[in-house]
Length: 104
Image (cartoon, rainbow, N blue to C red; front, side, top):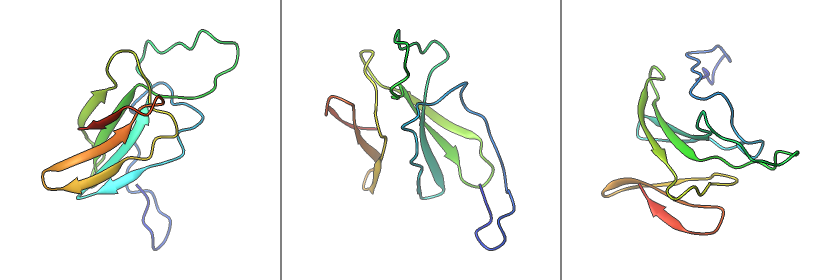
């Protein structure tokens, strides 16, 4: 987390060993910071890493503590993660790389 006035770091947390090269987006809403990342066992099996992630993590916006982790079901992945949030009920909307929608 960065202070928008002076650029100073509020907190910094490592939540995964890696994230796909397509993980350029961070979503923030209602005191949460949402990011996509890879589980520890992630392997593409390819000589080139084309990106993708298999987890979404919610962090507390004040201190960076992990609030929850959600694993994408059935060995699927999110690619170019850009979640949307809704308030009633509080949830995250996203889709997998295959276009399968989820509400978490």
